[in-house]
Length: 115
Length: 109
Image (cartoon, rainbow over all chains, first blue to last red; front, side, top):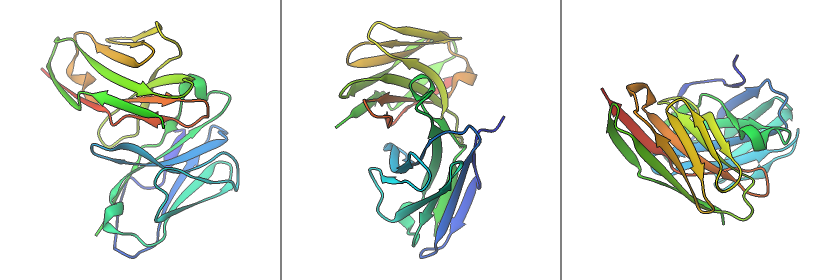
């Protein structure tokens, strides 16, 4: 019954490393999103994509990039990890056909620690 | 700019002690207001969608209401399993949701 899958639940990376976070959805959704969640700040949008090979910056894109080569997969890339990127990362997907009814479907999240 | 403010940040309840969570918002053209539940270490799970002022939705011990400026999530006779963070989000004219910071509810037996 898993619908949005994030490849890792926990990751520990070193400062300066290039980090890849993967997200796959099986609902044929057009839209995919990457958020980070920090205590007291809520969910902040990093990047989103409304179609294959399309991407748009969210509210906090600095230090991140994304890739969407296939409809079901949306990858978040930390080009050079820094300690201030330690956070919970959430992937979500939606469809214009259903988003007004159900909003987004979220993955279980990846807890990233940069040391 | 769309804004969503949730209060209180944290709520500690005794089992059976009813209470309400608030979500106030400013948005241009509200298409929908969503409530999600998030358990520790997990992603948010959908609870309700409200579309217009005066609308109400219920699910077990939870009831969500909507006015033109705010939404309330009422928890009636809560149980320990209702402990979670509750997130509110608004959907303006485009498809992107704007989220509040959440209210963390702890229900003690």
